[in-house]
Image (cartoon, rainbow, N blue to C red; front, side, top):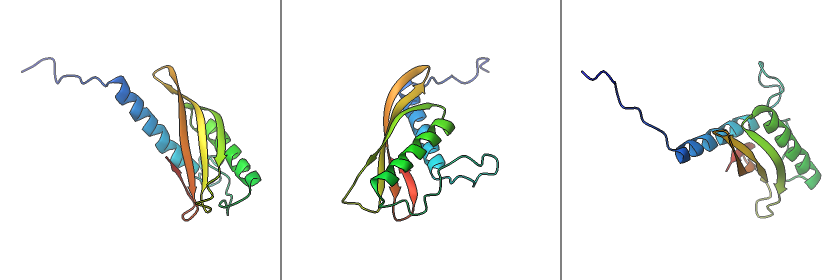
Amino acid sequence: MDAQGPPVRSVDDSDHIVATVEAVKNNLQQILNTRQGSSESSPDMGLIDFNDATGGSTDFALKIAKNIKDTIQTYEYRVRIKDVVFIPTPERPLDLNFKMTGVLSIQHKAEIVTIELMLDGLNKQYRVL
């Protein structure tokens, strides 16, 4: 019988980075698809219900971008948001696209990240790309 037990598998740094980025993206998708007031334990979590948040004016998109930034700053501690920018896509008028840039803390290091977000105009759900 081996007293040492099973071998310990070490995780490569790049695997850890990929896993962390995927975990953050999954959390962002959860947060962005939560509407304020829908969580009893945290009623401020999520985005404001913009109701018809597709195909709107640039001012409306800027308000959504600000709400996205504020929400992520509050509920995803691993990311410090630098900017959320509305990206017009005339070929897909029902969708709203945003590009988020920020700093992701991974293993005590700051990594600059860019994440694309899309509000799908058909099902009214955010997708983190």
